[in-house]
Amino acid sequence: EGQDDTVSLDESTAPLPTLSVGDQLALTDVEPVQHFTEPPPRFTEASLVKALEEHGIGRPSTYASIILTLKNREYVTLDKKRFYPTDVGTIVSDFLGNHFTHYVSYEFTAELEDQLDAIARGEQNWVPVMSDFWAPFHKQVDHVEETVSRKDVTQTPIDEACPECQKPLSIRLGRRGQFIGCTDYPNCTYTRNLDGDSEPEPTEQAPIDHACPQCEGELIHRSGRYGPFIGCSQYPKCKYIESSQPPKTLDVSCPNCKPGQLIEKKTRRGKPFFACDQYPKCKYALWNKPIAQACPTCKWPLTTVKTTKKSGTERLCPEEGCDFKEAYTADDADS
Image (tube, rainbow, N blue to C red; front, top):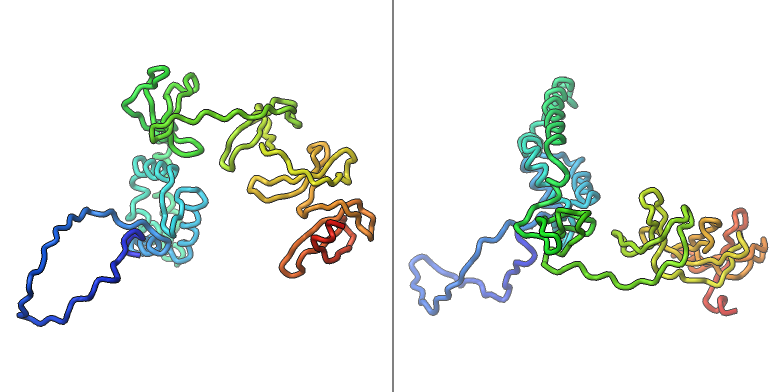
């Protein structure tokens, strides 16, 4: 835990021979080696908990929630079990350090937790403790809201003019991380990556031949944290989205509406499901893959295939109240 993963020990180096005080050693060679000061190793979960313990911050019951908050809010990422700050984490840390210095100090946090422990033990009244904390903290929050704008936090001016409008450029924060953009946005939309490359030109995409099914607005190609997608141009008034990839057809008719066909789709998190292509007019959907084989028990026009570790691959009836179930193989699909 005390050194980075990049530092490796040469196990092939022979140990020193047995020496006694006064032994004369022969000099065989002098090898000059230059060493540079290395930064302290990045925190792992174990070393972070150890540091919190040393500063008297947190308790065994809160260490897990502290680490979970860092991950859930995407302040850090884990690489080879070590924490690396994200752009959002760096900006939040700088903001708190610059404007709430007293409240993010080790001493303040440790002292306040000791007072909370004393309250839990019945040794101290909670009203004076909260009053002493809240009055100056609320005043500081109001002061920051009045004097600090969002631009002051998320943008860092640089000594360079925009090549398109000659206005100043700044380092800005977007959904995909930091980039360099013009301060005259939205009048000027010039942007480039931090490494100096301009934003790549968007590739030509096929036109969308249908309108938004919810508001009849125009659909456009967009890109988000989960990749490219098609969304309504009236966002945020209309939040309709669909996949930019052509749907995978199954040659299975929708049992709920005759003209519909079942297609494979994915949730926002990538989990596959199967739904009618007439959505939102028809909202019939299944989690298990449907096949065009009617149920022999209730005569429902389709059945589904489900694979589990316990039962293997089975053919099931998706209709509620029907308990049809049988083993299923790839040969059954061909027949």
